[in-house]
Image (cartoon, rainbow, N blue to C red; front, side):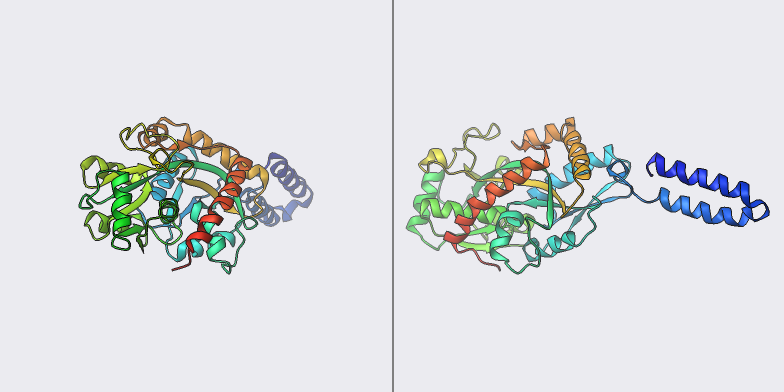
Length: 346
C-alpha cells in the first residue's frame, strides 16, 4: 500500500509513455508495471503499518506474567489489525540477547519487544557492556499493564502471615531459599527490595522463567517467591501457595485479607511489576503514535479489560512520552536497590 500521490504519478507516467512509444509500448509496459508494483509494496507512512506480520518478542520463557500480558495483548491486536501479531519467546542472558536483536532491527514497527523493570531499569546497571543503550537504542511506545507484586510462600513454611514469616526468617538466616524468574527479573528485584526493607536474609535461586521457578516452589524445593498476580492467583486460591503480602500501596480486591508490606510496618514500601511495548530506536513519531493508538484500542476491549481486572492489573495504553517518563523514574528507584543489594549478573 502506498500514498495515493505516488501511485497516481506512476500510473500517469505509464499511460504517457505507452501512448508515445507505439509498437515498443508492450515491452516497456512491463518495466513500468514492475516499478509500480515495487512502489505499492513499499511502506511509505505510518498508515501502511502493518504491511506484514508483527513479531512481538518476549524475553522470557512462556508461562509467566510477562508472557500472559504479552499474549493477551497480541491476541487482541491480531483481531484488530490486518496482519497477525506473533509472540516470540526469546529467553536467556537476562534478556540481553533479545534486546540486542531488537536494537539492530529496522525501525518499521514490525519487530517489537516487551519492556519491563529488569530490561529497562536494571540490566543497564548489571550489564554495562551489553552493546546497546536502553535510552537511545529503543523507543518507548506505550505501557501495557502494571501488575501487583505478590509475596508468597510454600505452605510447609511455619508462618501464617507476613509478620510471622519475617520473624521466622530472622531466626533462621540463610535457611530459606527464594526463587525468581531469573537474575534482575521483577521478582528478584522485589524480593531483594523486601530483604533490604525488613533485614531478612534468604538465598536467591534464579531460574529461566516464572514457569520453572513455580514448578520447584510448588514442589517445596524453594520456600518463597514474588511474581505478578496473573501467575499466582490460581495457586493461592487452590491452597498450594500462601500469599503473605502485596507490594501495592493498598490491598487488592482479589485478595482483601492479604496485607500490604507498607501496612505491616514498612512504610513507603511499594513494588509493582510493569510491562510495556518497545521498538528499536529512532522510530518515526507518527509510527509510534499509530502503534500506541492501536494498543490503546486493544487494551479497551472487553476481553482484556475483564482479564486484567480479574487479576488486579492496571491497564495502560497511554502516550509514549508518559511511558518514557515512568521508565526514567524506575531507573532512579532501582539503581539504589541494585547498589545496596549488590545485584550482579548470573
